[in-house]
Amino acid sequence: MHPELPPVLDACCGSRMFWFNRTDARACFIDKRSETHSLPDISSRGGSRILEVKPDIIADFAAMPFMDGSFAMVVFDPPHLVRAGKKGWQAKKYGKLEGDWQGMLRAGFAECFRVLKNEGTLIFKWNEHEVPVSEILKLTPAQPLIGQRCGKTAKTHWLVFMKLHLTSL
Image 1 (cartoon, rainbow, N blue to C red):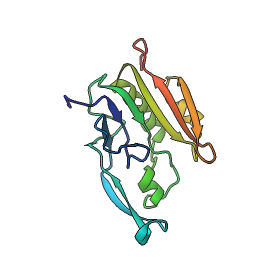
Image 2 (image 1 turned 120 degrees about the vertical axis):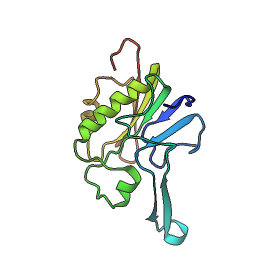
Image 3 (image 1 turned 90 degrees about the vertical axis):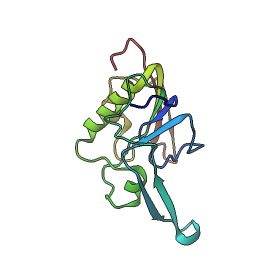
Image 4 (image 1 turned 180 degrees about the horizontal axis):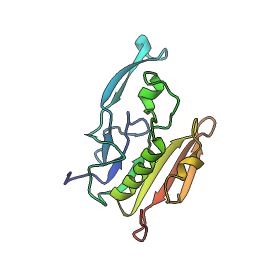
């Protein structure tokens, strides 16, 4: 396994878009993808920008290679798009839900709680552009403590959960 882990896990880091410091040593960044793309962007010099998905460890959030209770905090920002084209910039930037995505997200929640220490915090981010957050919350028995909607049309949700030692999560 991984004996000297930092206290925070980003279980689906993508390009680390919301991190203030994208190389923060307090976090272990995992993703099942490791790839670099040049995306068209008319606001960037040269008309494109680089999108890099470069995790510390290549791993799937539905089957993480860590021992139970390894992290004090887990950040879970899984793909939220179902209808994005595989080669489109949105799928490259955010990832794409395919196949039994409900089962995948259910397993992802279970894994996040498994690797979380007792009384640890899970921060979950979801954009309900295609799938309402109420449908996603049905995929875990855990109840969020607090939450916040943000974004131009209030479609992005930030939810905070806490793992309690008496919980079977």
